[in-house]
Length: 336
Image (cartoon, rainbow, N blue to C red; front, side):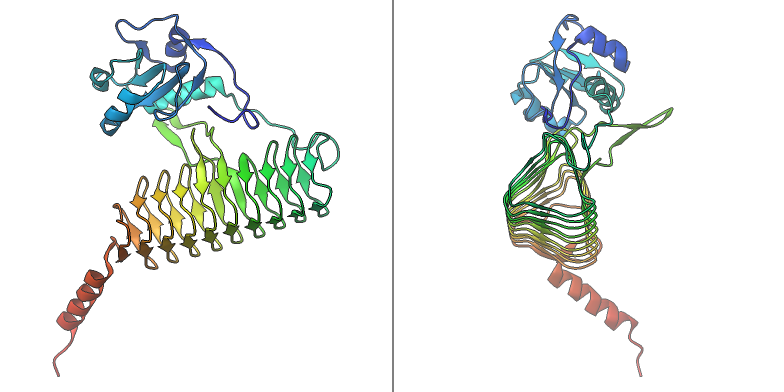
């Protein structure tokens, strides 16, 4: 369920209403009057939530899900037996329409009066620099310093002893203790989620949060997008360099190092103690095991096991990479 500190929900809606609004149709036997209260993910949905099912690899997860309904294709509907079904040619596009019904776009007022909202909660020894804006319902812990012109959005929670740099923007996020965000960091912006439709790219509402654990440091001008429905997570003690992009629903473990200009695509899962070199790119839904190391400029399009050291484009074991370079060098060497 999207965090009510950040999102205001409409509804509930009947299944028939949702079907009509998103261009889907009720599967045979589905209860048209069934009340749906929210959108959710297959893993976390409850009996009042609707999810989308567009990938056969989620068959087992859907069978265990507590969701109240799902939207899927006619072909995949054969795998659904435990909940009512809406049939759509494009389940992800239908889900985008449904999510927009439950969570219509709003423009929240950042501060109710002046630069600090009247219901924001600030520790007595928190320091707020000139030009900073603190939104409604935000909370800032003891000895935390908010830099000049920073914007702390509505509902954001920041722990104690944090340093939030000038010109940062924090929205839809919960920040732990002793966190350092350097100038220009952007936390909690929209994930890059669109569904191609005949009328153009349909935006998928981004209804998750960013969770930043204790002792994290994020370098200047880096960006961490909020999740689609679940959360984007940065584990305790992880250190992130300047100009790093972390997409929606990425989960990064504890004590990782991520170097400048790395880009991590949506829903990647990175274990504890992973090192990601400069200008590395990870494709979406990649899993990287604990203690793995990814050398600079590597392109990762497959899962990386625990402790693996990889390099190259596409990524391969680093010894193999250097053997290939040596072989190529011998082939191109001119005889004298």
